[in-house]
Length: 223
Image (cartoon, rainbow, N blue to C red):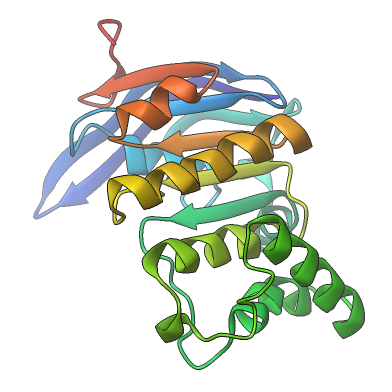
């Protein structure tokens, strides 16, 4: 379970203080799916970066199963992030010189998993997302939707408890976006992975078990 208590994040830009998040309180149960919606600049990406431990709050707490992970030193926090959290972004960030399979195994090899086990997991996940016949193709030989499926497979190879997806369908046409939507929803339901999605895609937001809106760094009660 994730508990967010009085979360604040402030940035300084050109000597001015910008309050990106202001007093957020939120609870997310294990296995839930949550959509975060709102206009550009509302704090969505800042929130998901903090939930992914890529950034630290200015004040307030974020508890994972009752533990404030931001009290940990950076090395321990990075180990937690790599083991427990998977990321899917709007732009897939695949390495163009490597195949879908090679891109997928990288997080596992970084964690010193054996090459055989990493390859077995990658092949299984790529097959699960419909790329069983395409895993030896490089990103330039794949469609945009196929590249995003590789990114999803890469996020799942270490079997994370939490997947954070920042506009996962934002760079795709409607039909391809629907396919990615189906994959994410199915993963949440079948594997009970906690799924948090930042999206402008109303169709995807409506398929999450919960949805919140952000406005000027606060939860918007009108959503």
